[in-house]
Length: 210
Image 1 (cartoon, one colour):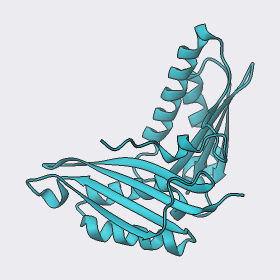
Image 2 (cartoon, rainbow, N blue to C red):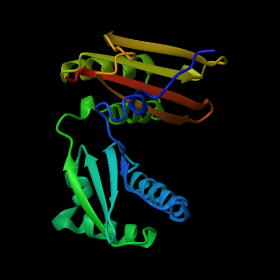
Image 3 (cartoon, rainbow, N blue to C red):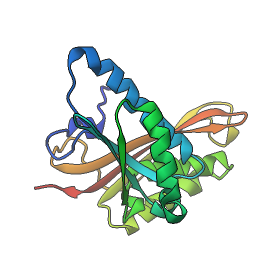
Image 4 (cartoon, rainbow, N blue to C red):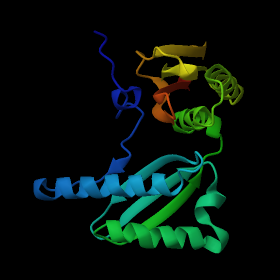
């Protein structure tokens, strides 16, 4: 059996960092962890109509929860005159036990975010696009954006086939065993009517960190 590890958790404290950064005593840990999960799920659900959220970071201090949203379309999240952020802040404060501050950071090159690429492919598959065309176009866009390598894998009943199978597309190199290698990874799911779930995995190699 192959033993696989998430490329991001494999590189934690080498050059990657946790998406949630806080410390809690044993009795509070589970409550705060559930709060974090609810905050993430709420933000993802709110902007689920199109892939826009690349990353959500949560930091906690003694009297504040800071939520940093990395997005490809800052205007969609901020809303007209900041109305979107104000409304989101009110919704998140119902889920959190402390006041919430929201920071919006725009992702300059969305084609180098594995999460956005994976969700975009899943979105295309749900709209009945051909999986080969979707994956090849995504791989070409990633390489054009300046990546050193990309690997995309889709698995399930592709094109409504009777048998589930796995297909891969790769460009350049993706050295998963090199800890210095800056590899971004994400997996997404496409719910296809009549064909069930199709899984999408994306690895993007952005070069070595010193």
